[in-house]
Image 1: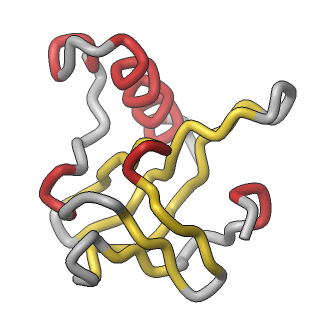
Image 2 (image 1 turned 180 degrees about the vertical axis):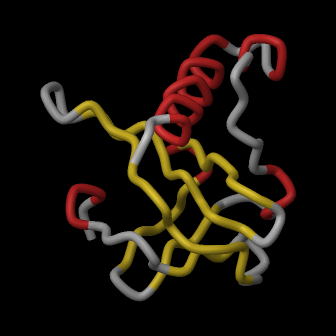
Length: 102
């Protein structure tokens, strides 16, 4: 399944096939068609799954390549949370999306 048609609410499973939560939002740059990752709603709050952490996308569920505990919380200051610039940028985008008024 392409990330462009992945609906919200799809279950997300970690590498151990344990339910982590559900897709809340797909983060992507539509113009250049770049997939960044997913904002996942979990019982512990929102988490960000980077594209490198996503193994499979299906209409019935998303399978991660990592344990659910490896997903980071979106942060207003992602640089402090992670020195990796690309991860920081993705977390910043996730935080901006979560912070937008609805």
